[in-house]
Amino acid sequence: MRDEWRWFNEARLGLFIHWGAYAAIGHGEQSLFRDHLDQAAYAEAACRWNPTRFDPHRWAEVAAGAGMRYAVLTSRHHDGYCLWDSQYTDYTSARQAPGRDFVREYLEAFRAAGLRVGLYYSLADWRIPAYWDGPDRDPEGFAAFREYVHNQVRELLTDYGHLDVIWFDGAWPHSQEDWRSAELVETIRSLQPHILINNRLGLADDDAAEEGVGRSRTLGDFGTPEHQIVADPERMWESCQVSTWRLWGYATGERWRPADVLLDMLVEAAGKGGNLLMNVGPTPDGELPVEFVAQMARIGRWMERHGEAIYGSAAGDVTEFITYGRQTRVGNNLYLVIRFWDRRGEVRVAGLQTPVRRAVLLTTGQEVPVRQVGDVVTVTDLPQEPPTDLFPVIRLEFDEPPQAAPWAVDRLWQGDPARMSDWAALRGRSVWTDGLPRP
Ligand code: GLC
Image 1: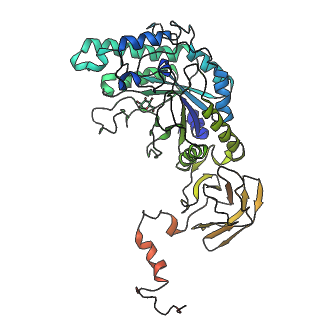
Image 2 (image 1 turned 60 degrees about the horizontal axis):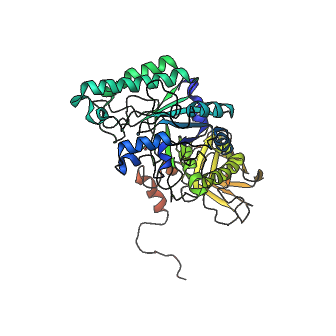
């Protein structure tokens, strides 16, 4: 991996911000299309949208407090409204009611808080007929629209300083060739060689249609599984997830995922070797919803104590542990992130054949006794009551990278099932109890 990209794997947790004029409607970021709104009325309302309480320093403070290391803001979503002062359109926060360049303010505040910064940019612009018609039906219109897109991307990469991530979306229904994505990538690289580009630049003609969102297998530095946490075998990846149960943009009547569900998404991503980009849809006024702020404060407190199990961790599915929680690995340490604390005062992990040197209950910082018989590791003297209302973590220390016993290298429904037959044979081969003493 390129050296200048290492921060991304270190970071593990980032903030996704879906914010735009649609926040005022309060039905997510795609209301224009999904509610089939009147285009002219929508544009007029967007021009009047004027969030007076937008304070990106406050946003950055919440993000940093949650232990996030980077952020990605929607500079423009599918509705085409731009949050920066673009010279290519006046449909922007700078030239309409707010009279402010929100992108610039966001970038400055987040950088000042020590966070890496990214911009989301939707290739789609639902206002423009040529986008819908496409290059076959309207070659000239589409070419002009594509030039507009390329110009805006170049503008963002030229006038806004050092960006760490550019996050495309909305390539559907057009191909990589239609968007001239390869050319766009070249431009981006020439302007900011270090930048990370996501994989939603449209399908190549010979790509099997992976998904409607146009995730390319051939272009892009990192994968973007959405609403799911699955490793991308070919590159770094980041799962993007809503912190509510529904929409990315602000919505009234939203339901919020509890803090343990949010934390579990992070741990699952880290446990599989990827990042979590956790979304928030700020209010029409420009504030982070109070529910989100409260959840992030809890995540932040947990990260303060347990961050070493997350930052820079590698996929940790060393042995069978799924019924208790998840595992991450950093160097020779194996972290047991325990989702279900069963109040037995001990935790038993089977299938670890590397000798354990030491165990620490990270949540309290205390060393705890550990014994190992064969490949069964038992950590004892643990408190009955969970030491945190989120997930306690135990750090198992080894002198070399921990290895699973052969039977436990694969999970239950994977691998060669015959590896378990000797284990079963220890009891015998009959369906009868065969000589077990009757009670
Ligand atoms: C989907 C949605 C879009 C959202 C994005 C985030 O592609 O169309 O609204 O911004 O996911 O990953």
